[in-house]
Amino acid sequence: MSEVIGRSQQSDSLVKFAPDFVKAHSIIQGASKSSENPHFKSKYADLAAVMEACKSALNANGIAIIQRPVPCDSGKLALETKLLHTSGEWMSAEGEIP
Image (cartoon, rainbow, N blue to C red):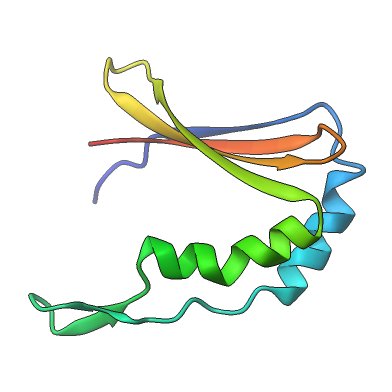
């Protein structure tokens, strides 16, 4: 079993963010599995398909997606994904890049 390394954070309040996130969540459909993995002979949803499935629903509810590399404690890099609401409230999570 591999160890999951990461952390999540959020603004002090999510009172304005939360209702709009719930609205967006109710609109988002599953991502299309349009890419093929020849090694496992399977289909998967690539990042472009995942973004296509959720970006318009999030944006219509005042939520933007921001990603950036950040340093982590191990000396490696992590990818931070932040959901930023028009109110200034936000949620973020980081995952270490192997």
